[in-house]
Length: 149
Image (cartoon, rainbow, N blue to C red; front, side, top):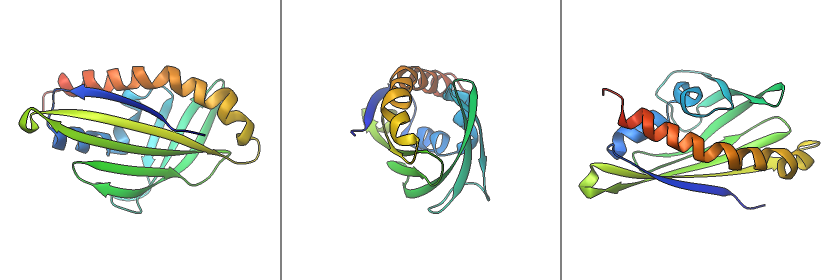
């Protein structure tokens, strides 16, 4: 299956955007399905850092352990699901705009289905993501453009 990608321009420096999106504690602020994201160790994250993300999918709350596999501040990151029937694979890229005063953020998400997750990915998970992802990027843009720091 192919990844779902969305891009949005944000009126914040790439360093600010990167710092925010790679801090897992912010995830529930800008992603509707994320109920909580709890780091399994100290922040800031580093390659190998793990986070337990709980998502609301329908009436169920589903935990997934995610691991940061790549970090290239302030340009890109990669985080991958380690357990559960649906394992997300998320890549983020930030390109500087206007001399580094603004950012173009591209999120690309794919999934590995395991067991019953093989059926869930195309039938439920990807359709849900296609609806949620544009809202999430708009929330991210709003939060970053209207925060004090």
